[in-house]
Structures are given as C-alpha cells and as structure tokens.
Amino acid sequence: MSINKYQKQSIKKYDKIATNYDQTLEGKATAKSKVKILEMVEPADGDKVLDVGCGNGSLIGAVKKKANIEAYGVDVSSGMIEECRERFKEITFQIAVCENLPFEDEELDIITMNCVLHHLKDPQAFYREAHRVLKPNGTLLVGELWYPAVVKQFVDWIILPLLRAGDNKLFSHGKLKRMATDNGFSLGRIYKKGSVQIVEAIKEL
Image (cartoon, rainbow, N blue to C red):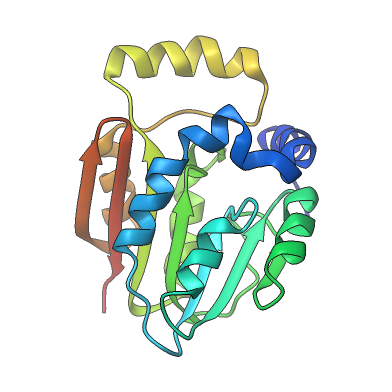
C-alpha cells in the first residue's frame, strides 16, 4: 500500500488515539456530523454499506443497527482497525486508503464518510473511486466541518501545516457539492448548520 505524507501523518496520529478517540477534541468536534449522517442514512435489509475512514467504527456500528446489512469499514490506521475489530465483531474491517477501496465495481449500496475528506491529497480520486464501487443509484454521504471563508483560509494556510496531523485543507459548501457532480453524481439532500455540512450524492444511472 503506497502512502503519501498526509496518510503517514494520519497513521501516526490516529494510531496513538485509537483507544480514546471519542474523548479527544477531534472526536467531540466530529460527533455532530456523525449523528446527522446517521439520521440521513437509510439502509435497507441486504444492503452493503461501507464507512470510509471508519475510525473506531462507531458510525458503521450504529448504521448496522438500522437494518440487516452487510457492514464494512476501512481506515488507513492499523490502530483504529484493531479497535474496530475489538468493538464490532460482526463487521468486516480492513486497512485501506480512501483512493483505492478493496471492493469490486458496483458492489456497494451506500458509502458514508465523516470528516475524512480534508485529510486527502487528492479528494477527487476518492469521488472517482466511490463512483466505481457504488451500484447505480447508490448513495454517498460525505460530512465535513464548515467554517466561514476567512477562517477557512487561516486554518488551511496556518493551522493545518503547523499541526502536521494529516490534514490537507477544508472545503467550502460549494466545493463539496461540485466534487460530487464533477464525478458522475447527482445531488440529493443537503445539510448545513453551524460547523456541520453534509452532502448526499447519488450515483447516476
């Protein structure tokens, strides 16, 4: 598995906090978008559902309670995957990068991703990969933190480089929607409130 500098930084960071992620500042900051994605996701019995950048598995674990699904999670951090396997024996977890998912073409019904996209060097590559593995009319739900433009620029150019924690850049609401439509998706439900933004994208038939 070839990894870039952002992935290396992410592995180092998340391996260290895998066992107590929910209690960290980041875990608390991403909890609101996780709850909203869980509200929006609508699996049916028999669906194959993947959480990309699954962290400690709490999101896909909660999604599995909504229907009798085949549930999967992938993350670049081996520490996080170990934590997932300890917590959720009935879910299949694998170490993988977001831009190279270990699934066949048109295999999945739903993909979720919560506050992971800003870690990626090439987020467009993830959208292409999600389009590849989703069935026609399959659903992609992407949640990200949102900040006003001035704050976003400060965070992108000053804070994130100093942190060296695997973060690349944040996304405006418009950019999040355009990345979906530029890669073969139509837009579904859109949510933006406070620091939470979620874009639902549907793979076009």
